[in-house]
Length: 436
Ligand code: UDX
Image (cartoon, rainbow, N blue to C red; front, side, top):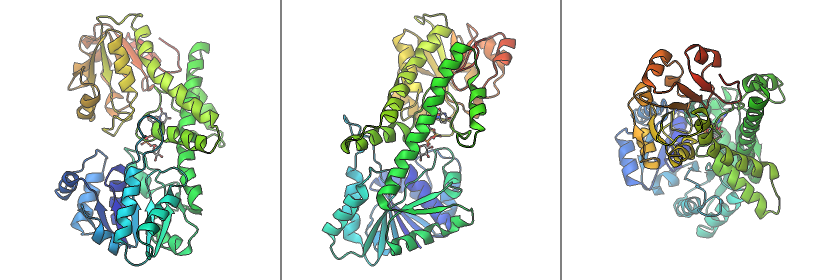
């Protein structure tokens, strides 16, 4: 199969490289000349474990290449994927579809022969209809089917998620379109991945509903964590106890500082807007957004309380800045409202992140960045673990304590055991567990 992938952001680059790895002929297209030149040199603009090697081997095998001009790759393609960004629109929380629609118009002009145009970007319900309308308006004779094929991959585990998905959702009622996308995904049938065909609008809604449900699960366990602290229960055991019920499931029940990242906040906001546009109020999803925002802002107060109630003139060490491990992504990271809150309370902040410090400096320029966790802890009155990088899971606790001015640790990811921390003489706070 010949595939054109429009947009070399997170989803486009990972999907393009994985499709090429299946044996398809893939051209990735992006308007950003610098990005395409870098990719041609083998430089990957994002941090994703395994992606550089995957890109390199498929470029070498001549199954993957990069260009800024979509005309030739679209004309030759069996399937054209639109994987451009759909950021939150400033002011109203709606998804901004400018890039999707301008890609659709350009694709329309370049189509030749039967082609399936597929939206892979997360787009509001009904966007496929508009993409089809734009294409038919710009090129009335085009032999085209517009389908929706949402992507469920997680940053940090993107290649694995792509190659071993729980399901693949393809939204089109057109038989020829289903056949082409069935062929594109055939290699995954070996991995027993269910390929689910639906109508286009249903596929578009599945993506939003999945993300909103996962965000709800996290927010639910976070509230149960707050209650656990008050009643003397252990939220991790509560999560295990409920998660063993197959109807609930064990995943996405880790209590923490609130969800962040490029998808959950943006997509839950957009889903609320889509519903409002259709005179439906999604009260649960609205509550999830509100609870999560309040939670992220409350984390600085939690640190202040652990450190004795007043942070003025004190130093706080922050371990982990990215919204989760194995990424350099800082979008909507819980560290941002946390650090801002600490600074507002008069604290001095030192921070370390294994991969994300360059990105973090753009968001949080006013703090001190340290080369490793121990340097970060030096002279600190409290240390907060914000992102659960493996590098922080087996710290030398005696050394850490020796570096600190006060042995206070706030572990927002529950990666240490309260009894171990107590044994090392720390005042230790975590999430939804007994304080030591
Ligand atoms: C998410 C979805 O998982 C993925 O299917 C979708 O395609 C894109 O959005 P991603 O944003 O990469 O992926 O990260 P994910 O691993 O889902 O984590 C999102 C946020 O939730 C992070 O801030 C994470 O720390 C938090 N989280 C996740 C929890 O606090 N607890 C959990 O149990 C799981």
